[in-house]
Length: 267
Image 1: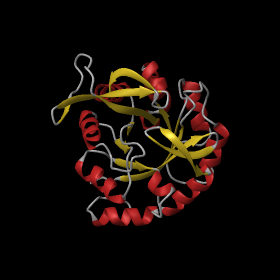
Image 2: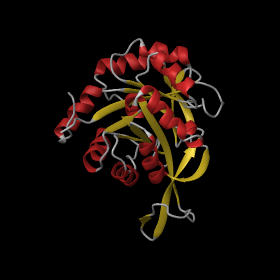
Image 3: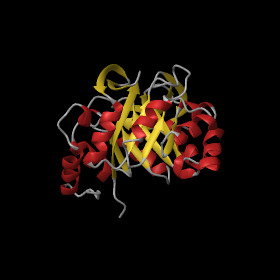
Image 4: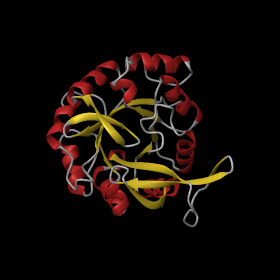
């Protein structure tokens, strides 16, 4: 059985790691290079670095900062934010990232996914999907879910969770994988920062829809939330921020807890 991965996330704004609630109410969490060094030493399987305002501000990812983080890591390192061209992805990879993530750029130009795959290899291509529940009338052929008597679907958002697209998240994940994504980084906007647990429905649906690895993101507040999403959905990895940035949760102790829960993990 393949081991599951534990991935701390560095959401970066103006050169600092930050964390918010449902992509808003941002607060400072520290220096990205210092945190990356710490998480690598504690036993993180990978690191994800997201320049969360790059797309909204129509600029490229902070290459110098990416280089600084890469210099202290010896584990896989994914970078996203503002990747809208092959040139953007190449810059990220040349500055030390192992994988390039794209969200807004891929939604606006799906052919970018295939171009990145053909240029750098599928293993380098991460498509990030920010999804939120929509209880309004769905577009035709969307994947519907039910909560009590309410019906909803998951809508893809771009520009850091600020702009709805009308695109069904499960269908988009399937298309992204078909176009060449090597991995899906799936974030629930509803759960993000709430610390109430991952959106199990969303994660299970996307994991079932694609054959590539899915990273569950948004809502982790304790190690048991990681155990639940890794044991009860098809997610290959669990990403978290707050429990590592602000709480006394060393990655090694979290992994020990997951191991005791029966999660196949690299100790």
